[in-house]
Amino acid sequence: MTGSITNEIPPVSSRTRGIFILVILLLLFAPLFRAGNLPIPLMLLELGSLALLYLWLYNGAYREVPSRLLWFIALLLIVPLIQLLPVPAGVWSGLPGREVFLPWLQLAEHGQMDNWRSMSLSPMRSEIAFWALLPPVAIFLAVYTLSVQQIVRLTWLVIAMALLQTLLALAQYVTPVASPLHDLIPNIAHKGAGTWFNTDHFAGFLEMVFPITLGLLVASLVSNKQEKGEMFTRMAKASGNQALLHGLIAVVLLIGIVYTRSRMGIALMMLGLLISMLLYSAQLGRRSSSGTLAIVLGVVIVVALEIGLAPVLGRFALDPTQDYRWIFFSTSMEPIGQFFPLGSGAGSFPAIYPAYQPLQITEFINHLHNDYLEWIFDTGVMGLGMILFFFAIYLKQWTNVWQRGNWHSFRFLQVAAGIGILLVALHILMDFNLRKPANALYFAFLLALFFKQHRLEEEEPKTVKRRRHESRREEIKAVPKHRPAFSNKEEW
Image 1: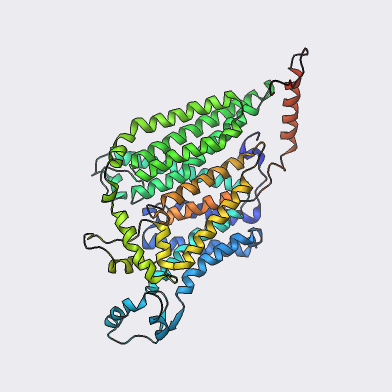
Image 2: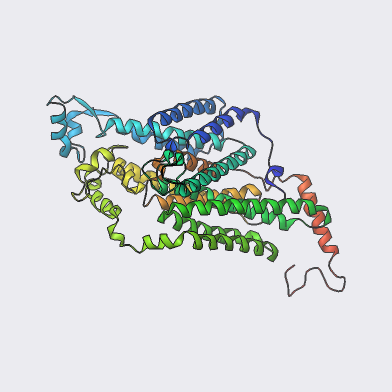
């Protein structure tokens, strides 16, 4: 990998310019009002996604998406629609788990049940779930068909949003509760979550972006180490400045994650840091670059330990069985078995779970705090199949992203996106991050970045190849004449 990202990527296609602008608007708007978790902002996102899908279809961009991804998107949208299909009342009462709720429905409808009913126990919530899928689906399809240059610009937009949200969250953290900054997230005292309502969900957003900054950092360092000779001194200096910028952004995001005091968020941030070090180590090569990276990563780890791990470890010291999540998980097994294989209906969990909720839990439970279990709760075997389908294509894509030899700068971003996807996939084992519209949109962006097909290493500009050849020739000339350029005992 040589040069900067913007110097190595093909020009922007004018055909996708309208799609590009609309994607920018959606990504900017999504987090502004409680991360899109309000009726009107969510409706605006859904309307914007319809316009985006129209442009996507009008430009024939669907031809560029692999069939396996189109099949996954189609099945994802079909699942809630299947559960909205009406069936005769006699058939409906014989569906798994429906007989328990039949007396309640008769009482609610004064004994006058319709002759046909949707298979979902909560048709309205299933319809809402279908419409909520449109924004992330539109973002994924649109971003996938954009040019590499456009995707890189969107990546910087996402990083800028994460940086601004982190600075806002830190300002909220240090200001009094009565400050206007806290009006953005009411009912959460002494914490900072930017425009998110929940600090755990804000940590989920930051943990998606954090690996991207590490990928840019390593890409800058590798670019720096590959420049040789006096003619590239200025370029190497620019790469060093980029590495410093990326490192500073990573530190700021790390501090933001720590100050959310999210146990899962901080643990996954440290895991993401470890995975990034392992995956990027092969590209670092020489000691000069690896030494710089070690310094930056060392600073990151020290900052995390000194600022936030003391209160976090105190939270870990609590008995895990006192966390209500484990009660949610155990009590959800009975309804999952009753409704299987059809499920209770997409999005119906908040309406159905109170019938199985333990008496010691008096609060309203809107989500199961484990998205995988909740998807199976709602959609049964179809949800289980979609989960397995997703991880199958995710693992398969790693075989395309991971390549030997020098990487193009864009490939560092793809590896980082793959790490971010993994962190979110682990986080939703204990939370419901993807139920928040803004998180779902940014997750869809990461998926499009990760699955984007390209051959940039094969299409490297001739100037870059010539520069690399001249640099290699200078290295050979610098070798002393009394010994060969490649000895048997050492690797040059």
